[in-house]
Image (tube, rainbow, N blue to C red; front, side, top):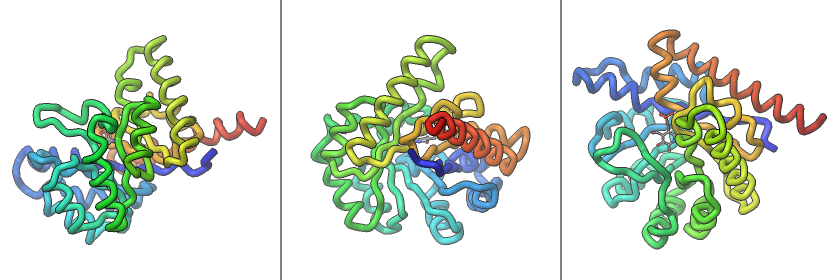
Length: 252
Ligand code: PXP
């Protein structure tokens, strides 16, 4: 069981708000520095093909000006590979991407795209990036991720977060727990993210094999009401409390 649960703060939606007016405010780099001061362990941004939030310039500045490891989410396209190899961020998370979607809708089908993904993982790993694949919590995707050479997987928590209270959410939580245990048994680093909020984070943070949660939209939205520093600190506190309680229950 990991005691330290890392928080990666995704600042894409600071850029979404900036882009609504086309100017410079609010600046993602300023938000990233604030996230570092509030206790984030890493930064996450998704450079999309359509540049709907983070821009190429943002990526350059985040790499140069912010003292936190950057995890770049990207689709497995030749354009993104070229950009990633130019910057070599410490972390890359390969995600599926569709132009029409509002946000990443599901995990990668790693098995279906195995040769292409394996070649991306190999190129990025050789450049010194730790490569993670964003997948749904099922064993076939985890086996395929290992075969593709990934060092880590990020389990998609969106279905869990969107489920109404009750049996469906509980079943999805069980899938996430089982997938975490299985991924760790394969030697993959286990992360999780998508859709997490103050209400949904605790049961995910309590899953012992998970070492990192990546959270964006809720934190930036909540910042409207309480400020970014407060929203990140509260998320961090909820994560740490859930992990400490899970550890306590194990040792009792
Ligand atoms: N992890 C991955 C791989 C994602 O694509 C996203 C969304 O960009 C997140 C985490 C964060 O999701 P949310 O913004 O819903 O917290």
